[in-house]
Length: 466
Image (tube, rainbow, N blue to C red; front, side):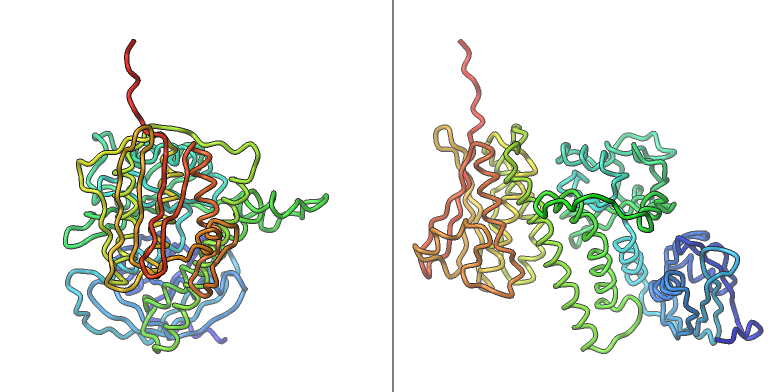
């Protein structure tokens, strides 16, 4: 590729993190109006993808790109080559053309920022409407300590687990003040930024938030380990290696595949023929299935360990049911299914581990949504019966015959289903978890009459005074 520097309308330079270190106009303005910073990670997905390929594979690339900020749609020709004097790339831009964009409220720019955050984040979490933690995931060993504390503190505001730089106000702050906030994470030497994506309409955040932690510096130890020497010695058994060694290695590349496919599917990098958008959707679905399988195999290793125990606590089954319904509400609405959850003010105290009970409910409700007909209802009912606290997840699906009920909790049991994204481990793991908490998971069903999955736990009854 011949670099015709005199024909470029703008030049730019990146580093080994794919940060735009310097850029000439109009590329600099596009970076800032797309929600990025200078210096900062490239905020145009199409350009970010090309720069990353050029850097990783040492290629010189020339491509047309289409991008847009919150004011204009831009088409341009870019030429990218690895920087001979650094770890990044040199960018040349020509044939810059702009058209007005009919997006006065900046939705497209916001979607692009969200897509970038999902792709490069090293920690992701799901929050409730009060920014309380519902779940948290990270494959970064550097963040292992804070992830463990967050999981122990589910139900508390996420801001309790990090240090917000330059902020002494009472927590939690309004989410708009926290979106983009710089923070320090205990146990990490790097600087981080929080990225909050509000869920719900018409009031953003009314059904919760997605939270992402994006590092401002590269993880040098992780980068070095990719090229490090192979570990000598005998290979560990598959079951013992799944959670500790194989799962972390697999999760990150699969998550990247899903993020890239979702960026393509949603056409954040520019218009795309419908068949290619459908291919990207298939890739996303397959990647999510692989991640689900990895998670289930990891949980399988945990629950089958002879030393496995849960951390009993005081929980409210009604509150957990509402949380689970909120997390899966969008999936249900996409299929026209309504989740009928317990009303606010209804309480059923129980003894169990918060995140494990939530895990069971997410599995049961997810199955009910998957196997129920469009336009049906999934009911969540709670009650206390003596020393038992109970929650029932009932659906209007096809139901289970007596022989199927006897097998439904078996390991890898699919009951003849295929292609539905399940792994055949969810109910087996859920029953193991229920029994580890001193409870039970059972099913009541009949063909054509739906299914009722019943989770029983020890009731949290006050101890009578002598």
